[in-house]
Length: 220
Length: 115
Image (cartoon, rainbow over all chains, first blue to last red; front, side, top):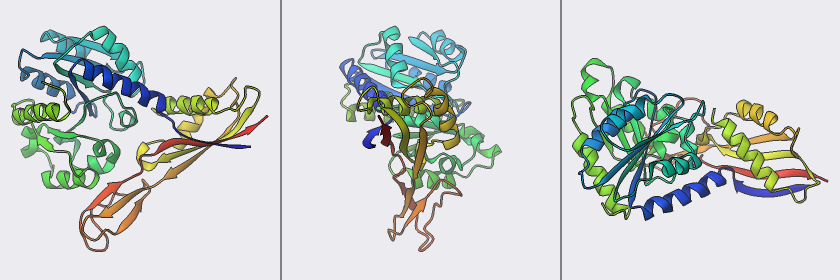
């Protein structure tokens, strides 16, 4: 006997993500799910953004890594509350892990929470966390064809950060080709060119955060 | 690698759909969009392990891949993107830029059940 089900496979995660979203909203937190390949500069970017958030706002970070607390130690060293999730091999964070991490972090707003997902351009795509915005970080040394090779993650980005633009003179990377590749899969997300090393473009990213938080009904 | 989590979710969703606790699942049909990034062999390997000692032990897992669509922003010409080959940035007819739509589905379509 055939039984029709037609139910989303990740509905348990999606439902938890909705609960997380309600929890974040009640705490007046704008939550950014930061996704990128390993080494694109997720932690460096988060640290640069944290530096530029006014001190009257709360700040927090959930660090996802397969192993180690290297990234969380970097965040803790600048005095920002941070919780480390070690997935022990799993390649993405899910909404349940974030819920447990929030119990540890005990962060309340108004302010910003950054969730650094596992370095991976494939697996985090399917798992919503309850975020206010998805931020995808690409970097110049990875090449300009990444949006074509990993369309799904770029398609769901609310903002795309291109990091390490200080390396443009050294690397064969075509900004126009990158932008055209992004636009094929995502017509709306702004692309912001930055360098965490020189600080170029960070102010534009911070401005985007502020505008997005207002548009999302999080009062910051 | 995320196929482990997806295989577990497929199994949980299928078991929830069982009409009664004495029935068994013999086949499961999953629909995945090409952008959902599900690799069939990998999903099946995890599923075949996870289903052991459940009412879905030995069930055949069928994966139906749904294509995404490339739609020309200029002339609206639509082509399927099945995930293989290079994603075409430009329309083959007029050279306009394409946008990518669909291909994100990930759901359990149906189960075959025997009592």
